[in-house]
Length: 353
Ligand SMILES: Cc1cc2nc3c(=O)[nH]c(=O)nc-3n(C[C@H](O)[C@H](O)[C@H](O)COP(=O)(O)O)c2cc1C
Image 1 (cartoon, rainbow, N blue to C red):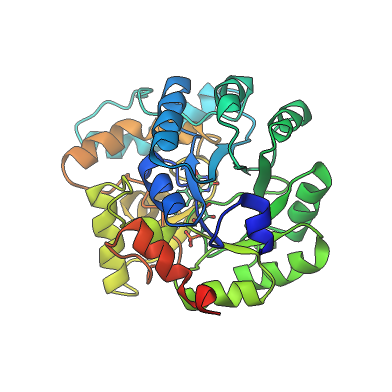
Image 2: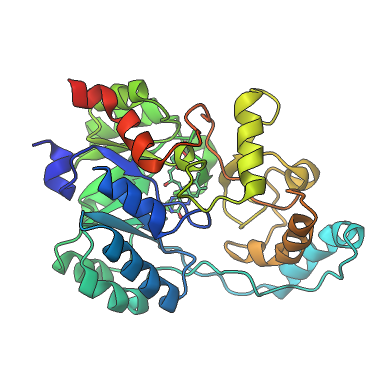
């Protein structure tokens, strides 16, 4: 019985990272059925979609699963800032033959609230994970009263300590290598954040709760390495993006495949242009033109709305110019193989020990 099995009930110490926008319950169920902890990202799901996805997930697996939410504070609308950003983007709208009015039809990112808790309660997930901190104390107490274990990402030692003090059952160390949004919530300075192994070592010394390693883990050898450094499990995102069970778009799959096969051809960078919060993805036109970090961008998550029209038009023409191509720095594990196969592959060295 490992610490991770005790914590989650899972056989393999592999967490398929929740990845909003590129997966649904199908990927999560496939990983759960293979013995890992599959995750359903719920940050971009409307309440009725969350209900549907939970039904699908629990029909597809009887194993423990993780449901993931964001905990950001939605910003006040700032029409002046939004208009200014749109005026900077005007040449891009003109190039695509669009007027630069805001298209609000895309999915929005909502923080965890009583609405989602109400839907979630009957399912009592083994694990609930959060990004950008933790929800309010009453909400946290509510989900813990179901017996769900609560985990959340830390990008610094201070965040790991904070999560432990607030009652998290385990902490995910998110190294700078990680794809998608940086999970920071105490301070926004990227300079204070570290690569996975350095942070893992420091957090292991700073907290008593179990530590999970994330960021750039793409092989059985790397899983074994983080476990030998004291992590109870590895949380892996980017490597699952090419699995047939993921909903990763063809444009995103092509960009990942090209970057994997031609190292150096297309780098990943941390950018705030797509959502208003720093996140790691492959360089594309928007980043080359305005970023990677731009202080004029509307606050998270409003920036996604500003470029929604540009993104939709470019994608309809087969262009990834405005598409967030989230990816971690290590693409070597991206393969068009089933999620079950990938999960077993990642765990293959430790299960032999
Ligand atoms: C496409 C993509 C989407 C992501 N979306 C989420 C999310 O919705 N919630 C979350 O907690 N983490 C999200 N992450 C971050 C992961 O939890 C994790 O930190 C990261 O994938 C680990 O690094 P790796 O991608 O190098 O394996 C996302 C990562 C990627 C690549």
